[in-house]
Image (tube, rainbow, N blue to C red; front, side, top):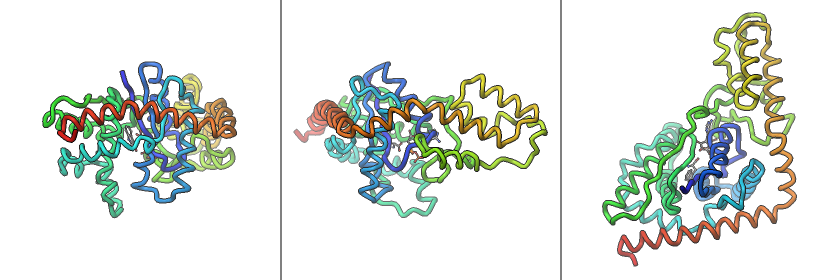
Length: 321
Ligand code: ADP
Ligand code: TRP
């Protein structure tokens, strides 16, 4: 089974990215042949600063390696190191109905926010389809917001296969229902674009401040809180603390007597401890950047070997070769 996923280097990774995508993807490494990449072409639709892109790309590479990506097992690379994917994007775009892209939520959301869209933003799901199809991927672990893009990929692959004969493997999205949407510090979906993130490897003081500033209601500490399970800090605590500990805090909040300040302090401590080992590993890796670069280049060579074969298959099918 081949597993594939990508993440854009559009900013520092946060708990939503970690629990929604990275952690499930890293767990899947054991179950098949995993291909994970840094979607730097995709990031061009929203980020135009080259230095920032380079820095974010390195940051994402360090994050994945620190969190347990095993480069011996898993093929880990930068999207643009396999330029074949852009050629496949063209082939796919010629079988992609406009309506399919016009219906994509992420595109519609950006339009609704008043962003004036470039063609890249509109065509984004076609590049994503090429990312998936060029490696004959079977399973694509992503957060719920990316599910529609994987469905678009399936539609494109089915259409191409109908028109040109069996060429592509039809992939399945895989969404972990238990952590489908991680809430941000304001209660909305945690997202780089909402400024409500808790960074995965944020600086200690800044992150503590961010967690302590999560807004709660004005009920007094002694009051029982029957809705304790909905509390934002409790929801986040469930992700970073052992289950018994999170249940214990929830029960204390429900019963009354636990102040929000103490709850948020506990949240910070558990967050900090949860990522302590990875944080240590990350700072070691940051002093061996030549190793990180080597991992990415080696991954690209392995990925490219597969991409060339699949692209050639598609070109023959389409009568280009
Ligand atoms: P952002 O919204 O911060 O820009 P991306 O869109 O780059 O995040 O998402 C990268 C990956 O992380 C995707 O697979 C996405 O589904 C997942 N993800 C992002 N935010 C969350 C969240 N709050 N909860 C769960 N998964 C998330
Ligand atoms: N669009 C995805 C995101 O923003 C990133 C991505 C690009 C991706 N290509 C992919 C994810 C292929 C899975 C498979 O999160």
